[in-house]
Image 1: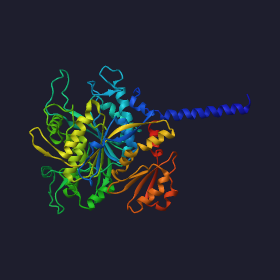
Image 2 (image 1 turned 120 degrees about the vertical axis):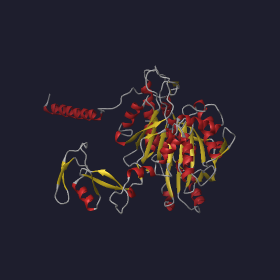
Image 3 (image 1 turned 30 degrees about the vertical axis):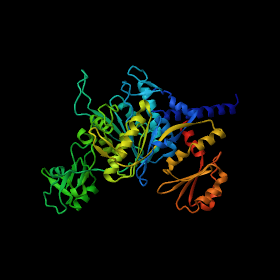
Length: 543
């Protein structure tokens, strides 16, 4: 073997060692491991691409100046795939109530119920959740939040799954909320505690969390906590200790005014101590303990607590009664619904009255109901997007009728008229186009993308409708869809006198955007090729 050959082999070996080092670094040292299970609805997307098709007879419009809410009937994997094109980075809040995987026919995987004896019970649930949570994360704004209800069966697995860096990451968990779901304990179990609580895991999309609306201090709390023992003109105050023996920080020495030194387990720095003395923000309590004075004028609110009592946000029993009242029946309408007060409370903590709220496991439609009710109470313009399949007719017989009744009004069990909350709704179903990238299929996808583009732009009012192009609008802008590129001059002439910004989608078998043809009105239009813009999203998801 020549010297050059030996050198070449050494370089190859060295390169292989470096590659293996990088691979080892990638491997998780701590986390959750499960056997990945293929899912029919996901595999299907390799051959069929999901689109939206509007059920126009289910449209509800009560105020054209208000946001249009969306209800999508279909598997939530397909709905989330579509939303990855229409709503990527647009959603403020997600709330979901997934199947708890109790083994009591509450979770279906590949058309079969998963029971307690299924050896892959947890793996199937984790595979199901991971696919959907990855798609959902793409929809959230950088300041977005997600709330997930869960119980003892999967809370441990869900927490570890959410902690994965490629999902949300443990640094983005905000809290685990405990909800008191019932006040009357059950004695069905002979061995063990009666379960009266569930959990709601709260995570943020990034560290740029939306500001939470804090709870107002009650007068009773103020009276108990705030004093003015030194008649400070700045008003009542409470004390906050500056050191504590239970403080895990090591002892350090700080210098008081006058030169006295104190070695304690301080919470603060020397600069902070100097600032407090300078601004007369120190109160010395009995025993010579130094405290900071915190004035009521600076603290009219406090952080929400992560225990939600039944009296504060309602129970499952209350939720069951709500549905019976809406549907004017004594029969149970839906198993284990969530109370409107619970979801309304969570949404009320988000400091955004124009938030887009997504629930892709909508069930009976509680989230939509909560959004409408909260808007009515505080004058907000929040918009909801609900996604649910139609298993056991849950969408057509429960979710949609509930939202319709809540918007338009209904008669309760006593025959009394309950006023509607108002609002608008568009109803869509998931449909499919062949995925093979032929010119024929691209044309089909483009023709069936109209509803998706209107959902993406939020423009549902038709302005121009012909075989070559269409124009839709909302209160703020227009959407143009051009099927025939030869119609571009006619389209430009048609919109010449329309004031406002346009999002224009032009059919192209490649990814040509036709910028030159719109150069004279480039300040007025934003151009995108279709279906290439849609296909790019789907290639990323279904690779």
